[in-house]
Length: 340
Image (tube, helix red, strand yellow):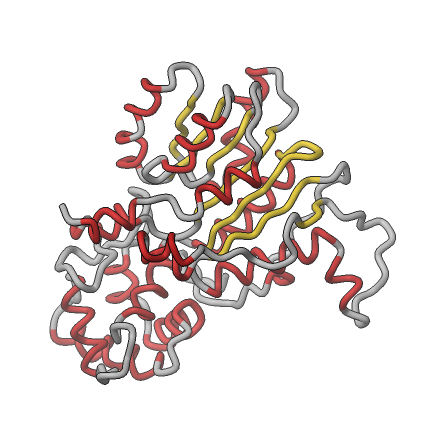
């Protein structure tokens, strides 16, 4: 396998994440997005600590068993969504006699392993079933493409893909599926390309935004991120660290707004917000601005070019209620047919 195929599997900004988490002997950390295990391995190698790692993908859990064996007694793998982290981790904490964890890391979005596997249906460059589910349950992208009405498709593609021609794409999808169900990734990519023609100066494939939108919707990625951040707020002990790596503006916007509200910067910056004396900041930011990968890392791992790392440390204040509207969540059709 060539270096270009291997590069996406490198954990992004690993050194910066470890510097922020500051793993210590006896510490307990949560890797909310285990994937290929890069951050988990880094944490376990940095100190004589333990890690609880979560992934909704059963394939990732199966592959991670070798790491469990390598770090015998120090790694626990949990299959589930990191949005359910509070429930997934609470019993494990009780078994260990712990009140909380010393740090949480998230690497948000689809993993390079999932993209590389054509049968998972994430890539518009490889033919495979139009699936896109990170887990093994729920509606697939094919279900959404073939069964949702044109208006709902357009809204999903516009909101989660930030596609300016979302209505035209949705109309083309509905017309194409009238001839035959759209069941393959390249078939959908072809439909999108029939509407959005690639120009020589375009840096991304015409289907990029549509595929992103479907993936985010099918996996409720932004909802998972919001719930995961809230769970981390409940789980991290005073002085513990939170590190979140995102890869596009929708994800980063949620993290930025969450930390703005939790650090109290939002109340100070917005004169229209009511005074809330009881809202003591639950985090303080380690770095005010998002960190970016250095040139040397981007050269080795091109995936890191779009990554942003936001860092915060927990205060002694209680956790605040989760306000999805305050995080900028826009209404889209829900997986069960309503509006989320």
